[in-house]
Image (cartoon, rainbow, N blue to C red):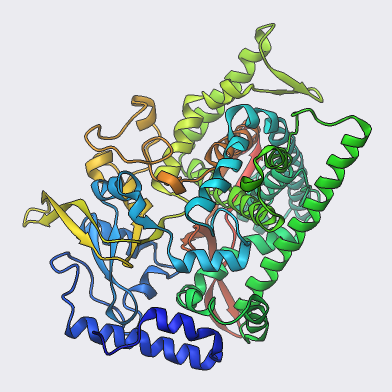
Length: 604
């Protein structure tokens, strides 16, 4: 019998403790647990390679949750192999997994043994409410069952015109932005200005515009609500709040490890007060964003219900033709059996999650696509010619199933989704640069999973053999999405290169010997299993419509700025520039991705 207090005892008594005492007791518990394991329990992952802990207190967590940590993540997979031992608090042994065999088991046949971590669930419950990212078990399955039909091909066809409306508006706004910059440059007419900018080109922050268009697309397609009509020179406050939420949460990664314990501190109103009293700017920013999302969701839900009631009273109901996804969800919820219906808290939670999830992927992937095309002009030309040729064929053939709105032609969904170069560029970008490089899971009961043991030799190659590892209950581990997507054993020796043409040479350019249970194209970018990304088709349709519409008109090329990609759970770009203040030069980072842009071939 252990002389140390049990976790059950601590959780049962947290409600009567002050915050100070609770944190002190928690630290004592973790230290006691570490001492007990180090003296009595055999290390669970003895023999599995990995780096030494960087800190006796936080292990490797400071490296794994570092904004500049992308190289460290890649180093783990490249140097140690697909199954790596890393350390959490007080020497807690964890795993960092990118091995396809292990991932098959975790997301496939053994998925009932693994779930989201308590840290992830409790933090999301606080921020989003009881939505898809904060529920488990039967409740999660019920919510997913109600939400899944919203993302069917038939339903997405209804919202495709909304995406086109927004993409065309974006092009109009960008054209004004380019013209305004060129007018100012022409008026200045200085040699310095002409040296700084290419003739006929303006500088656009494609990251900022991608964030704005992603939120507007999510708002109008999901909620039927416009957050940002793109006309204003500055983004909507909601855009700014959403954009800063994930980086802020990521910077609080070590603090968030205590979320499961803090969630036991008294009733909900008391926990909210604790957050209000916390003298931390980042915590208050997260609270403000959470409040903004929650209040917006409640107001929009009330508006949608009133609209449906008015339509019913007037006999002009949509008859199943609702074009925003929340209206579809309300219809499905009304038709569901009473025991399966979502309450208002669940509905508003779903709305917040859907808006956030719908925009975070596209706002990360689209800037990366624009940046890669800017540095690969030959690929950009192939994509542009393919899009323009599709429009040309459309105009030449009478009876072609094409939509015209305000005199503007629109490719039908089948043609758009079937454009080979555009498809290859999006897939390859998602493979090599997944917007979420890793997720974490916890083992809900002891499980044994297979993996490939890699042993380096003296010739810069390695010898692989099959092995298995027993994962104790309550073990936390990392699933490396980026690492699995770059495994040479799956994708070939050029797995670390951005090569869209690999998707043109074969629709399945990966090893047939290993099946990765990903939801999309044999990769993990949208995860897999019971917690895969429910809206990946939504994201793919939106991205392709926006990219096709913009690339058919604009040419992008790189500026001289140094761009770095930061890890904030979701990757995001920053520009590094030298700034002189009081005679001292320093390098400052700003969230942006500037590219030269011009309409047609003005940059050529």
